[in-house]
Length: 587
Ligand SMILES: Cc1cc2nc3c(=O)[nH]c(=O)nc-3n(C[C@H](O)[C@H](O)[C@H](O)COP(=O)(O)OP(=O)(O)OC[C@H]3O[C@@H](n4cnc5c(N)ncnc54)[C@H](O)[C@@H]3O)c2cc1C
Image (tube, rainbow, N blue to C red; front, side, top):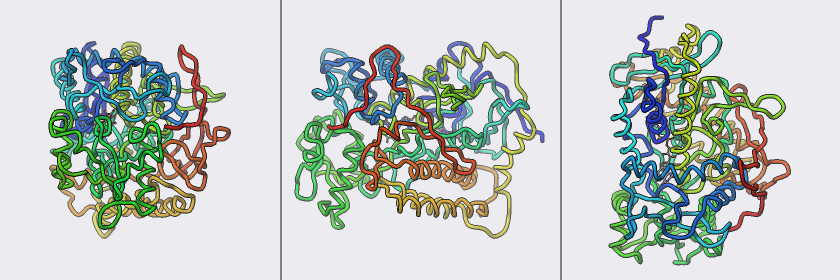
């Protein structure tokens, strides 16, 4: 098979914050790096991040990285690895300053320092008063960060393949990953990119659910490629539903609204969060607030004609604060909810938002799988960073503002580690033709003609099924039925067909390729959820309402082969400080 081939030292799949921060390290160190992105880089989902990025700078209220670490461990419902969490919280401070120096236009305090707002789950002094830890550029922080990183990469001469879709990883004859087969969306032609090191930075998988805050492109492609390469995904049952999506639509209304003083009320105008989280109220952790909203609606206190949402009120903040700190929210609310928050409340309901789990990595972005006797084996040449990866800093529930932090810290570290790896492994690896053929088969299968289920119909069915069977509250019965339906869908997918088989800019073909990834990743979520028989963080089971530290203080690993599960110990020992033992989580 003759396919045009390009060679690089490093291949990065994904141009969000994680991919671009990794690429910047590499390009600056004169490593020959290629970044592949299925959309123009600045359209990656990072651009949509609103509220901000956490770092204990203590610009507004007293703060300290130990408190940030404590909040993150507690927020994770004690499932996050404390060594990685400590590392991230310490690195947060230099990371934000590095961004500032690279040109990110943060909002400012009167004294000129970076503006910081309170966000959910933040405290001072190990669970004390509310902290203000989230560094913000109005409510367009991700936009500011992504554009700055892109410009810096252009300056450093990173090589971009814009609008190229990665189909699958490829291996050499020894079985070592040596790049990926990609598809140029414009021409529909394949291209093989060989590289010494490959970093997956493909972002989240929110599109597995029907109602989501995620962009159309967040289809879990990197996670699915990893599964197909025989590597498990970790902690996939922990999927975060953000409490405040625009009701019935899913677009995000940032937690920053509540950070600035907005609050939730039910149809009777009651501030119901006072009942569920007496201290933190509307700024309790996301899983807590999302469950409270769903409970209010289920118990008949929802607003609107069908009683199926609640209200987010911010009129009392005044037009000036809203215009200065939350301009994007005002615009979204006007367009998508028909409500101007300066005058009326925004109708909201939880929306699928963030995958806590993903490709298992260590804190250097290296993909690791469990080896014998509790050790870990590093997969040579394969890295992952950002939302698709699980360095295990979010455990069972991520705190707002910790994801931009995660992608920046671990993207940067992965970049640094790849520099060393590339220098230590100067020999070029050649793709095994068998591996290339397998990757090509993913593409050519869509050339089949004849009768079959239309791919787009399956996509809609699949996303509805995930929403109905793997949502905020999960019981054995509902999930088992969901698994059954998803398995059938996976079978029917084998017979799916495309109506349009042209090559040039065939977006239906791209969506069909994405659908295969969605199904693989959705099954990882559903199967992992079915197996975890406890309630922890975002995984809430009315049939097992309590957290079970005796049996379930462990990470789950899902293998695509036979929908198999395995488990791995949580690393509770941090790097330099004392660990935080599991305690009851109250807000
Ligand atoms: C609406 C919204 C608001 C948010 N607000 C905040 C916030 O305020 N604070 C916070 O900390 N977090 C926030 N988050 C979460 C955070 O923004 C994301 O987790 C983070 O930006 C993900 O970054 P990433 O680099 O991993 O991936 P992304 O930014 O999603 O980028 C993924 C990249 O991978 C590429 N890609 C994917 N698949 C392929 C393929 N097959 N071939 C080629 N390229 C591919 C895409 O083109 C893209 O370039 C928010 C998320 C959303 C959805």
